[in-house]
Image (cartoon, rainbow, N blue to C red; front, side, top):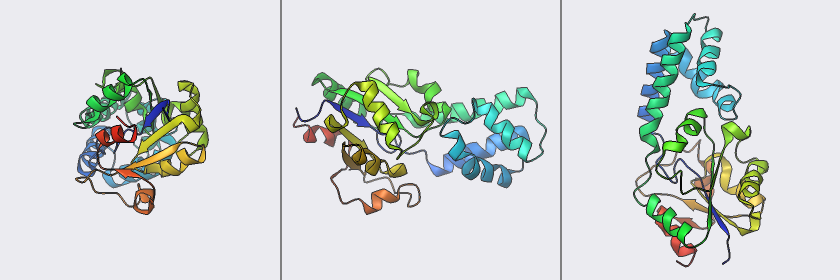
Length: 231
């Protein structure tokens, strides 16, 4: 076999990206829960604290929300912080549903003897929900930016995933939708990288700029990985 492991991105790869309308609705519900002005809360949540949240700067979602409330001079009780964090957690759950072909594809790859890894730029909700997700038992080792304290395209994140799988980067195939310049990051450490672009999902030009510029190999569905592995 050319590869010993296949490493997947999460959002936009194994699951659909979080729909923007649903995301904005969740932010609005969290802001309302703690009594914060919506536009200011959105700015702080979506733009200013996301880079901190994704690398685990805040130990809990409550701490992130409390930080925003403090910046906005909005007093908030612990009970409301817990309620707001629960809103965020439960809103994340339905958007971690595997794509139709994801489970079957992962099972086939694993049955063929490959190790399976995952690298995701994500906040703590994903790490907390992970054990209950349908594909968690199929992934040998997940690597989350929020617990690894670094994000794509940091080469150390990709090397950490390889180390956890006990596989050399050159023996890994990486699949992702281009978020965070992940494909370049994977290539930088020696992995082969494949862009996934499903026909029904539009590309966010800012979040996935790399997908618009990518000239390397690409697939249109998770199951297309099987052909790359001669399966």
